[in-house]
Image (tube, rainbow over all chains, first blue to last red; front, side, top):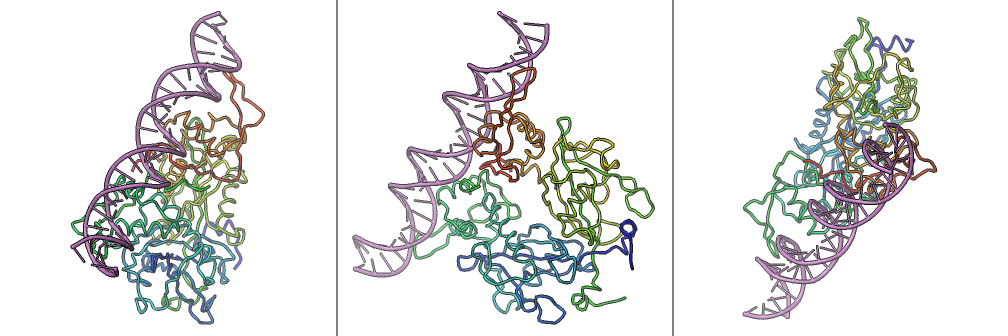
Length: 244
Length: 244
DNA sequence: TAAGTTAGTTGCACAGTATCACTAATTAAA
DNA sequence: TTTAATTAGTGATACTGTGCAACTAACTTA
């Protein structure tokens, strides 16, 4: 059926619509390294990029999903079993070229999971696996334009970590200041001055001490929790002068 | 035609797809105030929100538009005639509730126009008009969820102006430092220290002097242009300590 | 020539981080 | 039971960039 542009714009029922998906970049820190969860594309003739790795995601379900964010949360729980991690939209990418099945648009979110809640092998979804990130990349080839999406998510995460408390969401409820500092160092891939770090964290009232310490083979460390567990804290400056 | 979810996810040709639009928040500074370009919704029975004001935008055209950004640029040129202003994605919003015609998703961009390129009345699109922004809002009621989208765009702009050179895109090619400072003050809705401003701008190597001054009824001002016209510059700090 | 106005500079205070040297508390080894 | 090793935590000073305020500079108009 042929139609003119002006007609199309007045009848939304016959207007052409792009394929619409949501993809979630799920981060966690394992073995001192940032990792991302990737699933295996189904190995059926109907599906493009068979057998390759991809970001968890898929078509918006207009029955199940009230909005884009709940669609992202649904996909996140399918793959990890985790209900309410930190979740933030990165942006959207759409065009004629990114999916061989036609014009498509995807809405990309990123999530931060504490390592303790990261699914092990045999967890909720067994086609999902953690891949370490090195140099803004992952070592396998990704389906669609997911390499680009992943890179954008990493970029956003890194940028924001410079001046916010985001890495706290990579930790369990109780943690030491060294734990927290370590999350920053892993995400930023550089070391941070201990003294300046502590001053900054206390000045921002990011954490409060709890009545516990963590013992070990050396001096025990004070345990802390977030002062406002649901809110991101913004620092007045980035960690070191931002490289332009 | 009824179909199961699992079938649907394997046949993209029969999968249900949301209505997909792109909306553009076009900013300029007129009369010492930040303004947004708003269009009139068509006054036909088929269209929702008849006669109300809305952000310029509309359905993605899968024939004309290679990707989302070129769709945004097309709509921008339709309404303003301007070809290549600063353009940045704000994010995407989608859900069952935002359009009476059904599940829809919109991709929101914002653009910055120099006042000199702002269309006057009788310009390219005469249904478009500039509205001043006060308190993160505009004085008229907007169609759809456009008030929310506009607020998000303003928020993004304000935030980013604190630590980038974005306001430079609101000026013509040649400008004085007072002009530039004034753009910051208008967008941030607060005054900025002249001396600190100049130091910061020079330290970031944002501008370079040209061989001209602007005369007037008082001391002539040195004219400048951007050192790297196509790149945003990031400052090491926000202007005043960020209010948390 | 003086007043008014905007452009541009200088010097000091202050905030927040970098740097580095120090002290503290525990375990394991000597 | 002392000592070394290790990680936790503190303190003192320097440096960077902005806030603030007072100053000088260049032009027009009365």
